[in-house]
Image 1: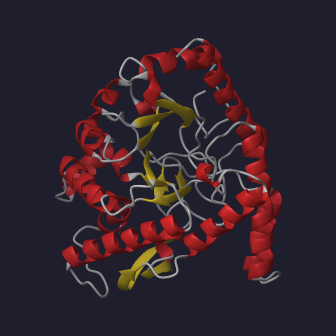
Image 2 (image 1 turned 180 degrees about the vertical axis):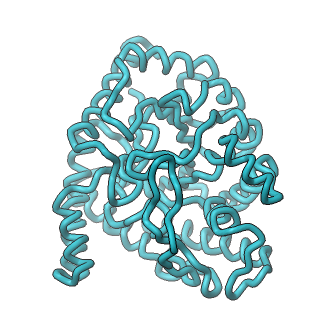
Length: 372
């Protein structure tokens, strides 16, 4: 039986959204909010287990963004309100971001407390904690946030333009996080990243050239940087990376197949699992998979952005097309992205979310019967 994986985020239940609003308006305490979060995470684990989702996360229920909350958890990085948000296709995000204010370090990172809570909840439910995963943004994504989204040739507080020291401290902060995660019993860590997806986009690549950057050089630099970080991750941890093209309230930020980054990213990144998006024409074909070595590839065949689904026959056909470039033992399935990369969630309802999980189960079961 092939194991069904999931990208990480799930739609926030109404009671969780209400609790977060009440906390923001000082109607409930932090402890009261956390108790409601615990309750919602427990219900999510039960529902995922019932729906044969093997790998389990907390749905990212305690965070507002898939990436910013993690960065805010490092000492030396602060939350800021910007003049405007990031522009996706057809929508502008909330205007929040990051700012370096001091030396970047990992000290009592809140995500570690959150993972310890997830382990506790899983044990109470009798769930094997080896099935638990944590999703965090990648260290290369932080470079992308600071040097590309944050402006080119930028100067930082504390570091000035000593980029080498900045990058070194980021690696050290991540290394410390990895070790603390392992101490809590963590065995599966997923790094999320939209930089490589952006480097697949023709318009984005052209904009980089205007700013004296080159997407191919950035891809190589980021892969090398990621490998340095991964080399500090304990070998007991399964590492994964999700290469996303953006997800904010069912809108995307980049288009283009993986062919522009595959020969560098797929061939050279020392990761255990790739989560890749292949849900529509914007994602390109499967040929770039020929660069994958022996890693597991979690094929994201179903969109989380709309309620529409392909037929089971179409999904089977697509899975077999992917198998032209990979051994079937390397293939797992998921949706192409999370259901709620930010707390707003995608423009779908709860029923649609679970219908998509059910369809992936049907695909899994059908292929198993066929000896795929």
